[in-house]
Each structure stands twice: as C-alpha cells, then as structure tokens.
Image (tube, rainbow, N blue to C red; front, side, top):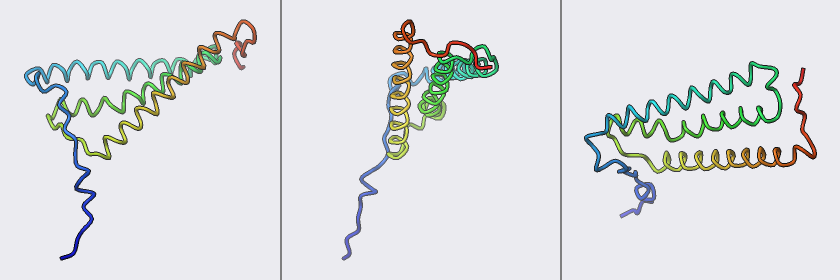
Length: 138
C-alpha cells in the first residue's frame, strides 16, 4: 500500500464564531458594519481627492495625510468584506490560505500606517528647527 503525503488535509478551514451568541441580530450588525465600511471608504476617498486636486495642499503634511488615507482604505478593505460576507451569508468558514493572506496584509498595512504616523510626528517635532518645504510646489 502506497503512502500519500496528507499535509494539505491538515491545513483545513477555520470557523469564525465571533457573533455566535447574537445570531438573531446578524442583519442589524450587517447594516451597521456596512454603513461604517462605506463611510470609511467615502471619507478616505474624499480626503485623497481633495489633497490631489488642490495645489495649495501639496505640502509634506498633506502628502502624509493622503497616504494615510490610502493605507486606511487598504486596511479596512482587508477585513471588512469578509466580515460583511460572514454576516450576510452566515458562512463562517475561511481557508487557511485566505486567513494567512488577510493576516499578512492587515499586519503589513498596520505597520506602514504606524510608520507614517511616526514620520509625521517626527516632522512636527523637528519642524521648528529644520522645516520641510511648507510652500506649494507650483
């Protein structure tokens, strides 16, 4: 009898049971999180468009704010759609690969966002002594 490598069977799916005791409120949670998700997407998109369209805002601090908004769009989009699909369809399964990809993306984007915040804090701390270019590039 030939033995077969069964490592793929060991890496099964995860079952997410975050709202197990609140099943009767699943639809209300879906509507609430959908509204929050759409407000986050629209708010960050508006910030990016305002900074991009107004030449007077092309200074380093607004550049960092626009990049933070872009990172926040990605960060919310890594976890939000899966949460909404779980609440809507009640399918609480997530594969190991999808869970790993979501975890990797979430942590990478969170580290980048923290780095941008540290750079912005350093810029504000050093600004009185060594100001960056605070005039529009025109």
